[in-house]
Image (spheres, rainbow, N blue to C red):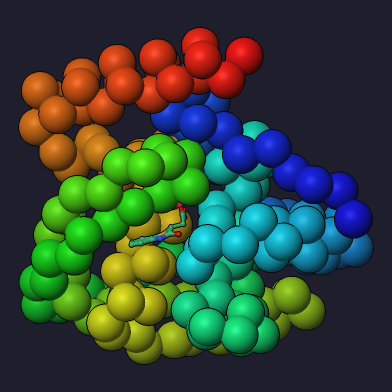
Length: 163
Ligand code: GNR
Ligand code: NI
């Protein structure tokens, strides 16, 4: 299985807008399988430089409860909740983000079948975090510009050291 490279903020490509998947075929299913190997509780295709509306989520501790969202759209949101978020594309940075407490999402599964999911708690947060990636938005963009600049400086330094 291909090991996918995860784009790191402030990489420009994290701000690209993903296109809807025209057909859920074996190429998409291979992408899903590869993305699922990149642990973390969720991953958007944007993070692996594939600009298609594909998300995988797994909140289970055993890493055996895969949720695939293809062409997902949130059709309802309500309430408000604040959570300390992190992101595989922004390693080592955690900060509070306020989002809807409950969401209804419509999507296609790996078989290309449409389904609707009502989510709350961490799942609702994760769905919103991943769908943001698909429209080129990283969670740090909810923070102050001052914090964003500090995070950019910190991560750029780190990238230099790792080279
Ligand atoms: O691993 C992740 N943890 C996390 C914690 C709080 C809110 C959202 C997330 S998603 C993140 C994985 C990731 O970067 N997905 O895009
Ligand atoms: Ni993320």
